[in-house]
Amino acid sequence: RSVSVVIAFDRAHFHPLPCDGGVGAGGGVPGDLDSSPSLAHESGRGEDVLIAARFLPVKNQLGVARAMNLLPQARLTMVGGCVDSSYLQAVQTESPDDRTTIIAEDQDQTKLVELYQSHAVHVLASFRESPGLSSLEALACGCRVVVAQEAYCPVSFYFKELLGKWVFPCDPYDSKDIARAIREALDSSGPSEPVESALKKFTWDEAAKQTFGAYSDCLPK
Image (cartoon, rainbow, N blue to C red; front, side, top):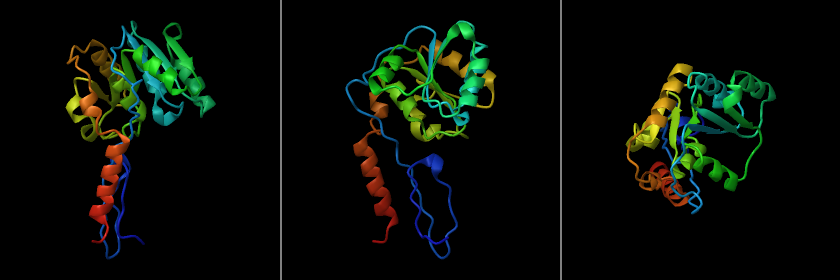
């Protein structure tokens, strides 16, 4: 209530706030995607599914592990730093033992690129995401991606032109629906062309331009 202008750097983080005698303003600035040549488009392989995220309840590896039990042909790799050891243990318990690889530690960018390029689908069925840097990196490496639906991730803002082709939303609270979205992504015969054009807005230059524009629009002339 003590400010007249609010600038949010992501659609998922912006909620209009009442301001006494002032104006509440907000904009969505895209996240940043490393444009290194190492993030080149390559096709994924087979029935391999990847999750690159820290092990935290909000990232919902548990829901994905349960979904994988409904996909008997698919293999799952989960990679990310362990922030919550009890949650990691629950994920391990629910995961199909013979088809799951868990790497509970952070990986450098080179290793992540190798993982993205050797998997067909990346899943980030989080309970809150905006949109998730790993989803963008996975797309840049040629993966189809499964993300949480609009109520939990602003998919229309970030992925509108890719929905049903490269991006498949799901209800993160429903393991059957997560499995459905993964299956659709694995079976997708959508466009094979690279998605670089759709990812051009996720760069440092574009983020800087939109940040400058948000300040210019909101601050007094």
